[in-house]
Structures are given as C-alpha cells and as structure tokens.
Amino acid sequence: MIIGFDDARIELARQTVGAVRVVPEPGLPGRLLRLVDARGTAYFAKQHAQASRYVQETHAYLTWSGLLPGQLPELVGRHDGSRTLLLTALPGHSAAAAEPTTAEEEQAHHEAGRALGLLHRATSGPSAGGGAIGAELAGRLEAWVERGDRADLLSAVERHRLLSVAGQLSGTRMESAVCHLDYQPRNWLIGDAGFWICDLEHMRRDARVRDFARLEFRRWQAAPRLRDAFFSGYGARLSGTDQRLLESFGAIEAITALVRGHEQDDLSLSTHGRTVLSRIA
Image 1 (cartoon, one colour):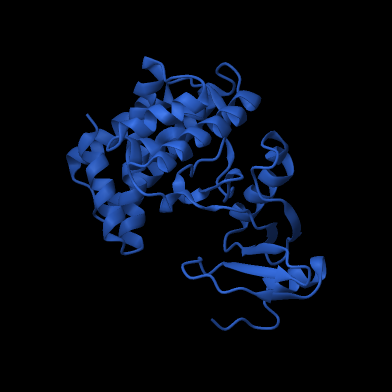
Image 2: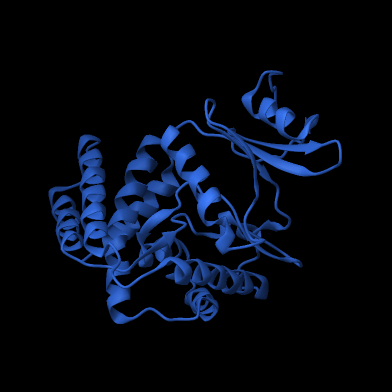
C-alpha cells in the first residue's frame, strides 16, 4: 500500500495528535487507515467520498455518542474540506469472526441487543414523526425500484409487489428512534473487556424497527437462537405489529441488495436480494 505524504487522513492525524505511522491491516476498506502515534495510541482515519455521509457520521458522533459511553469510538479530529475523520481505535475483534453456533456468537448478539436498546429507549417516542417517516421510507423504496427498473433487474410482478409495500409504508405511522441502520456483526467489536460499535455513517432518526432489518434478513432467519439472544439483551420482544412492519422492510433490504449487487458486481449480494424478494408476499 502506497500512501502519499500529503494524504488528507495522515495530514489530519499529524495536525491533531502529532507524528503517526501507518499500520497495515489486511481487509481494511481503502478509505480507512489504521494509524499509531508516538505514544502507541491507535486511531482510524476515515475519508468519505460523499459529503452527505461525512456530515451524517460527524453529526452522529457529536450528538449521540454520549448515549453509549465507552462503546463508540471517540471523534478526535475532523477536516470538513477533505471530509476526513480521525477516530480512536476500539479494542476487541470483529464479531463477524465469531465461530457460528458458539457461546461467543450468542453473547455478541445479546450485547448488541443491550446496546441498541439503550440507544432506542433514550431517543424514541410514541409515533414521533411516524407518519413522516413512513412517507419518507416509501419514497426511498420507490426510488430504489426505479433504479432496479433502469437496470432491468425486476419483473413486472416483482415491481408491483415492491410498490405495493411502498404504498403500505406511506400510510403507516411508526415509532421512531435514533438508529444505526447498518447494525450487524461486521460493525460490532467484541472482547474480554466489553462490546463496541463502529461505523456510524448511516446513523439518523428513522423507524425504530428498521434497525433490526439487516439482522433479520441476513442472520436471524437462519439462526433464530441469535434473535432470541439479541432481544433478551434488548429488553423487549417484537410485538405482532412490529414483526409485520419488519417484514415490510424486507422490501427495502431486497431491492437495495439487488441494485447494489448489480452495480458492484457482487453475486452474493445479488443472490441475497433475490432470496429476500422471493419471501415478500
């Protein structure tokens, strides 16, 4: 990996914490650098390609990090012009690496539920902004269907099915909360000292139940014991209304996976989208 001396991420780190060195980390996305300063403190420097994602993640750290003390990276520095963040590195290892069917995997889901429950309870209200959120989500779904149409990814029947769900969402009031919206094991870190959450670039106020969608359609349907462990930590089970709403969010999961899988030439993501789409009544 060749990193230029004038790389915005390194420049931000030098201006904020002094001299740093790059620590190679296989599998790290290209926009991230792991850095260590002269005292041995580790950081991640992250540069966003999209201004909206940069603004959203910065807002999340500045506004909501106090709701989960000690479980999120600390925002050490930022540079608006280059859309770059400097964050403390968290301990632990990725929960995605936990061996399937082990106590470690179940414990990760339990702790994930506990942390998300704290965030949701601190920021939710009965149907707060519910009608507006339903209409917004319907619009998002319709926009993704249009992208799928342009790429010739949908049959007429599939298109009708997805737009029907959009129509249902537009008239549904739903409880809102501050949501992570990419809440899954790849964004959790686990270790003997605790449980931590990373990657807040999608975090915003949204339908509370939608924060379970990635787990429901990517993990729990094949491993219901993990769902049980999660909601044991969360402190409340889904009501029948919540479960029906979560099933509706499968439409968003399906079409976004289909379109992104097509655009990124990611066969596994496309296959996931097809699988979820086939389940939508």
